[in-house]
Each structure stands twice: as C-alpha cells, then as structure tokens.
Amino acid sequence: MSAQGHAWSRQVKKEDEEEDPLDQLISRSGCAASHYAVQECMAQHQDWRQCQPQVQAFRDCMSEQQARRREELQRLKEQSSAHH
Image 1 (cartoon, rainbow, N blue to C red):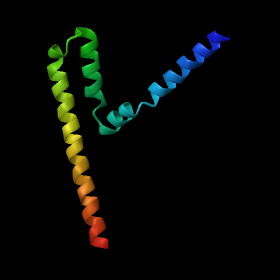
Image 2 (image 1 turned 90 degrees about the vertical axis):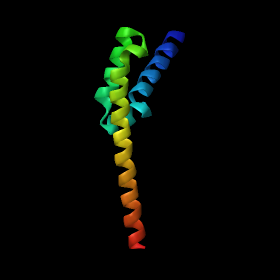
Image 3 (image 1 turned 180 degrees about the vertical axis):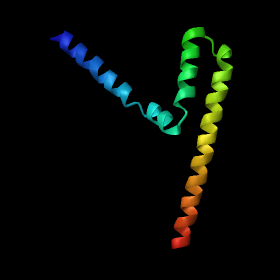
C-alpha cells in the first residue's frame, strides 16, 4: 500500500513540474532556447562562471521581453484612458 502512495506522490510531482509557472513564463517570453542553453551549460560545467555568455544571452532576451511587455501595458493603459 505504501508503494502505491509513493508512486502517487512521484506522479503528482511530475505533473507539477510539467505545469511549472516559471517554465510557462519562460516559454511565453520567447527566451526558452537561451534558458535551456544556460541549463545545458550548467549541467556540463557545474560552474556558472563558465556559462556567462549563455547567462548574458538569457538576461538580454528577458530584458527585451520585459521592455516589450512594459510598452504594451503602457499602450493599453493609454488607450483605456483615452476611451474614458
């Protein structure tokens, strides 16, 4: 009986990983490829200092995405105030 409970816990954890909000955010950002490059580098080298080009590329991608999102939100806010 406890073996089933253990298997059930592992299944729930796997489902949680598939629905990870951070992974969803990164996927929506368009920066998933650079994020995976950082993960692969870290898995290979086990030292973030050796992965600085990948880290910087991911940082740049996310910064650009955040800037686009801010502009979009500002544009929507301006449109909303113009209609009221």
